[in-house]
Image (cartoon, rainbow, N blue to C red; front, side, top):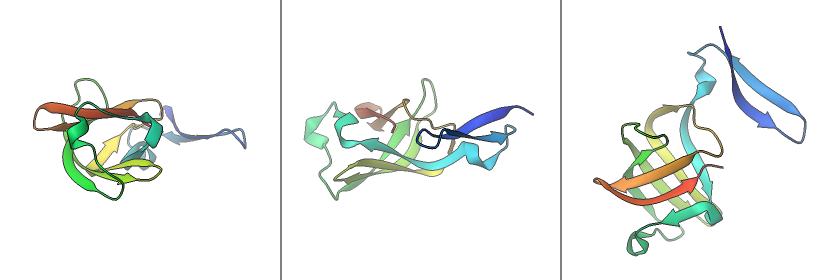
Length: 109
């Protein structure tokens, strides 16, 4: 079966891989976006540090919206999904929605 990159440790020069499409390391419950990478389209709905909000999130184009919880902390935003998500990777964008309206987006760290 093919190998998939699960993580990269630049400091140790190590690439972690998992074998096969069903490898559990390909699935993640959440992701993190650094504070300077969080962009709000609707500043009136921007979360303040310590606030949380249920919403729907998309991490790739044409992906069905996924239920999630936004958690704003001092260092950035955590997005915790109701269901495991496959293939979340640094550098991808996450976009969050209320109903069908895009509220914000950010680059996954």
